[in-house]
Amino acid sequence: MKRDVKSLYNELNEELTHILNFWSDKMADNIRGGFYGEMSPENIVEKDANRGAILNSRILWSFSAAYNYTHKQEYLEMAKHAYDYFSKYFIDHKNGGVFWEIDCNGQPVNTRKQAYAHGFALYGLSEYYRASGNAESLALAIEIYKIMETHFYDTKNGGYLEALSMDWQPLADMRLSEKDKNTPKSMNTHLHILEPYTNLYRCKKSEELKNKIIDLLLIFKDKILDNDRMHFRLFFDNDWTPLSEEDSYGHDIEGAWLMCEAAEVIGNPKLIDTFNKIAIKIADVTLAEGSDIDGSIFNEKFVDHLDSDKHWWQQAEALIGFTNAWQISGNQKYMDQTEKVWDFIQNHIIDKETGEWFWRVDKNGIINPTEVKAGFWKCPYHNSRAMIEVMNRTNGSK
Image (cartoon, rainbow, N blue to C red; front, side):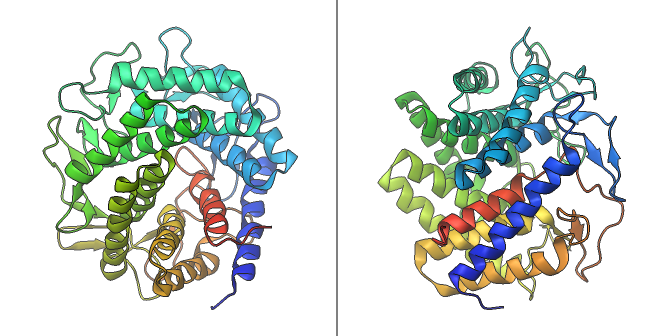
């Protein structure tokens, strides 16, 4: 459906409100603090479910970012609710860093230190500082940045290790989740270190941090990106030997715009030009290989097998990635693709009855009935960010 900029803005702004109302009205725990750990596929809140660092740091980021965009006081209040809980229960005050998982009463149940979780903690804490000016939040963000550099950074080969034990010792199993390969480095983790480092630079500029962002960008260009095929490789050995053959269309389009953002924030003209060109090439490959006729984005491809399911987060990142390509090039085909993806989200992904987005649908638009509506990985970060980013990038401001 063709729209003018104002109509698109109004639709995105309305959905942003719906997403955040779902989390504040249905998932906020006003007794024990923080947010409930899960909502079942039947939309039942599991009040005693364990709570993950990823979910809670992403909620912190989402409400903080929404406040920074809308200046609605209720979003700042929910961000404070998230911050108070996260800083009290997820920070390891003995060894430093962030616990992976706690129970509903705030007791640690999985104490491993995952670099990915530290990245999102840094992302949420820095965004909350931008919203609130809370000096303690910035101090915690800087502390986590130092921990990343002290414990996770690979001084020999560059980049960051996946995981360590509670007291920073090596782990035999470093996987982020059961579906991931057990490798010491991954594209996904590095993407979500680049992202918070960029946000921290917005809060507190330094040459050291700028150089770390440049190092990460060069790793993406020279080690992670397959420059012949314009896909990101996903898993690596310590020395950056690729250990996977999957193509992940959502990670491709998400990584494309986040690299552009990092180059822009640090103000490096050469890198801006480099990654703008890369982003266009990735957008074109995603269009050619990873998108369905209705504009939606497939999950991934392994050699010759296409997983044609469409997950909620991939559609959200495609909204931003194609809008970013339109901004760079001025080519209307990318904005047309943004609108196609948005139509698909409205028709198949948004739960219009109970709120939030379904986890995924198959190629025929059938919802998977077994996956949670909210949980350890299912959060308001991808979709709320997509609403905010596209509103900003199309100049559909209030």
